[in-house]
Length: 207
Image 1 (spheres, rainbow, N blue to C red):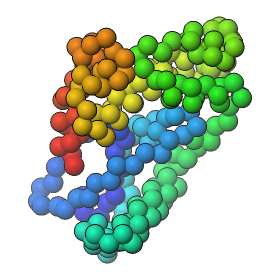
Image 2 (cartoon, one colour; image 1 turned 60 degrees about the horizontal axis):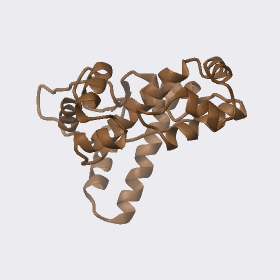
Image 3 (cartoon, one colour; image 1 turned 120 degrees about the vertical axis):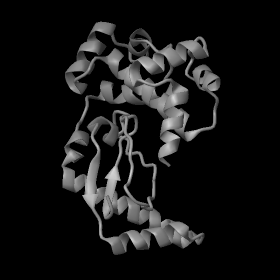
């Protein structure tokens, strides 16, 4: 709809259309929380906020400008709009979590070596903890099983590589340590509902 700003979480199946021509600007944003999750992806819903048409015209003019100061201003304006949207929807509470030192150390370990070969055992060894203690503490503090969290992070990384790089599906499968492209495609489709190629085409179509 005219006069609206929308936030579409990554990975959320969406489609859009307009009855008449409507100019649209797309910006790819990510707000990563302490636990490595994207705040908006965790929210899992499309957010909508009214925006003045004069503001849209100003953003469009900045977008078309090639001057460095215009691009810097545009970035600042988009993030200011993002702050307003967070305030309006009340999703900031999703990020307001604190963790014990052991679990806080775990998140960067996962992000650094994330792959399909990552195991709870290897993470427990890196933290000098038993698997049982780590999994119990993780679930108590984060609210989800550690294995499920690793799987979510792996899927999130796969989506980022599909949309943010020109790597082939085979190269992405290799980077994430899947045994082959077929296994990676099957894994992705089971969790996303689309093959990696279908997902990449659908998301690129939006922009």
